[in-house]
Image (cartoon, each protein chain N blue to C red):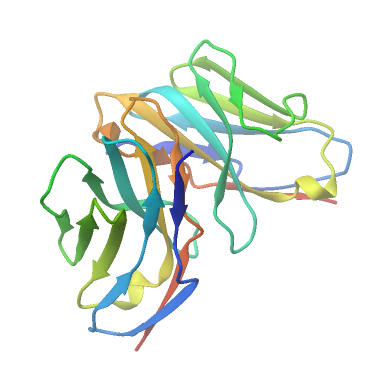
Length: 118
Length: 115
């Protein structure tokens, strides 16, 4: 089945530094990638949608300059949290849609990244 | 804009019993998809079941089945013969019919399974 590998699973960084999260589709071409943020015991909130080779579309209220998304290839998308602050601490999850794989109707999710900014 | 509502923040079921999780949604579209996702403590999102709105027949996947009422905009999940491994957060989700449209999630229901 379709697999999305997300790394790192956990990261602790100092306030003011940047953190990059990677999502790779292992056995399919991810034409679209969705990035979510999830606070404890809450639902997934969509941050942005990216299509391979295009600029990401951000949801209202999401800072484009803080959350940089790159989707330069069909197998890799990255989310960079720039100048991270404690309020950016959260669980980040990617979700990919691809062609020709069982995720035709549903999307395949990465395993998530727990970001802690100290 | 579409919305998804899950009115049960928490549910509990005895092992081997049946439980039903509720979900309602609001949309003006006629074609769309509905999903139930499971998020266990590992936080990995797992697709449980999906339903195409144009299909009248309720989807079934082993012990999981849905009651899809299009007119009422209701999409409940029934888990039969509950197992300890079913304990998780369950999210109902909506997606418009377009190929790359985003998933809209409900607030989730935390299901506990009692031995």
